Image (cartoon, rainbow, N blue to C red; front, side, top):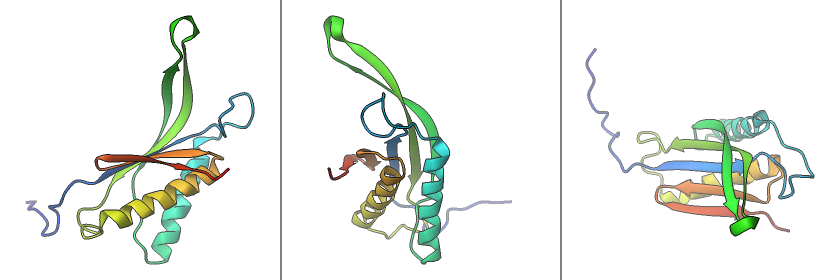
Length: 139
């Protein structure tokens, strides 16, 4: 079998990552820590709803990871880990090659909001191409 480049396959690379914590809220001593399947179901439902409506969707890979952070200084310095999921992918160089970045960003915001809602989060982090931002839930 021989391969050649697809006619519409050369475009700028547009990767994305959505990161959301699995522990509800900010206080580790209260609230549940959700199983990664809760996030997976939210991602699947969002993609399926868009596909059924004939709208573009965001295929990707979900990973369960540990976010490691440190804060404070001197003797009061601390480190901790927090379970998170990351959902990462690349905007299709064939199916979505002509979609403007602004529309991709709206899709990312919508999916991130769904994940935040499903996991009871106040904040969801998004990376797209060379930009990063966070969605913050209303108080």
